[in-house]
Length: 426
Image (cartoon, rainbow, N blue to C red):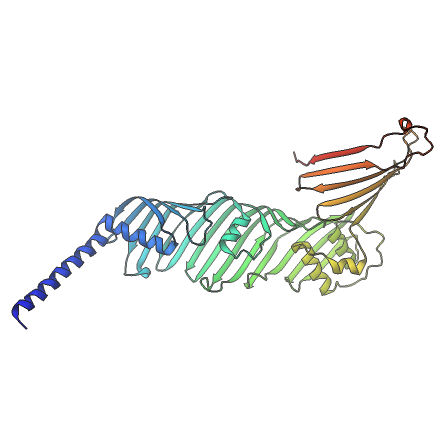
């Protein structure tokens, strides 16, 4: 080969090496170059191009410090969610992701229906150590973030004082935290005033997550559609790989009329075991009816003694927690959602039935009141429940008119009432 060609090739290689060294120096040893690399890495792993960094100090060759980061339009987060990080320190002890070190200071996740989620933590040697806190969280919003919409799609409510510590790798993480359920609803099931904690181990995060551990409830109140209100004692939901089918270990107490009832519900949701005890002692099946309806059934002394069948227990769990129709219970005992009332002093008789979970129809008969001279009345009424605290009530006097009266002026006009009711605790 001619000497001139050799010199030319060597010169080009030297120029290329100098250019490569210059580029490497720019991206690794200068603030501007390191900032560009850090921004592109953030965009790639978070899944957005909308990343704004107010100020950058240092370099990737030593330590890069990013100040006041604002991230929007992230993958897998609601469109209006915003992440803000006051400071993010980045270092590399080895090439590629395994050598990256991140330290997050004063992070904030802003969501539409929850208070700001505060977080801080670190990433070292492919291990995450993250702490979160939120004063008030929308249960629906959190479930949508971490689960498929089809899972528990009817759950809503508010949870307060949420703390969570996450530690592990990108494939396996341990979650430990505390919370307070202000109010949680799933169709007609309601839980409120429940302090609790959780310890969960999540694996196979990127493929099909498996969950092990438990969620503990220290106390609280739970109820279903027109059921008795149960005061929870220490209770647990236990997970064994399957997030959709936890095991129950619930203990509580309730009072229906003059009967105090203790409840123990254990086992898988699909095949639970129920133990009921009461004072005064009553049969298991009669106690089940009283809890399911929230009413005393004094005339049902023929309820069978002994254990409750597995089908009835499963139907009860479905009715209480998941808004089932309780058809097996109703068919077995012939009970309908009808209640009767009687006033010993006025001898007033009333009948109430629920057409739906929100609509009630009532009838009452008021006999002649000799002291006041009031004649007998038949009153038909109804109510519609908008929320737990707001309802509208209506009543109409349907007493047959006296056909012997000589003119309409002598006929008493029937009473009609429409009332908007507000329920408020002071």
